[in-house]
Length: 255
Ligand code: 13P
View (cartoon, helix red, strand yellow):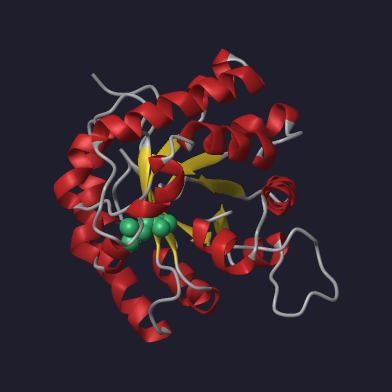
């Protein structure tokens, strides 16, 4: 039986790959996944590689995403990029509130909330990241932290709530090789869906896709994606290789 929600697998390339390397990776992904329609496939390269990667995936089923944006439309914000600039490059998605942005660049839920609203207003689909640290998990704060992040990051969206994608990324599982067990992940995903139900009602909560992120790879993707409330993956390290990225996407087919 297939899921109600279409699986979405997105590669977050983080601060990796020169333009040339990004092009090579994209060509590999295109060859393996360019025709894939059963799963939504997204690649999120650095800003500098968006144009080159976008050109290669034109007329395929692979969509382009960015890793961050500013909430203002334009102006004196040195070093920043707006939603319309990303649309200019044919981006469909933007990752917002990644734990690395929260940790290293001080992004708060309030900042993420402004960005989510700006992304939606700019016709981008926000992939909003939430997740607890190891310390928070060990002191049994996971659900309180997640609830706070979801409620604040997605505050005041009204009808637009249904337009977001959420990525649950436990910080302790990012780039560490430690993956949340399918049961641990499912538990938090179901909890997130419950919060979404309180915020927007059953239909909205049932429609929103919730990705898992944190050391997802071809060998563990099948079990994770088989969980009832896991609707995709946000992939870091394993997205930097065409074969392993394709392996994860293929695990999502028929789910
Ligand atoms: P890894 O897949 O490298 O653990 O990274 C996950 C992530 O942060 C995706 O946004």
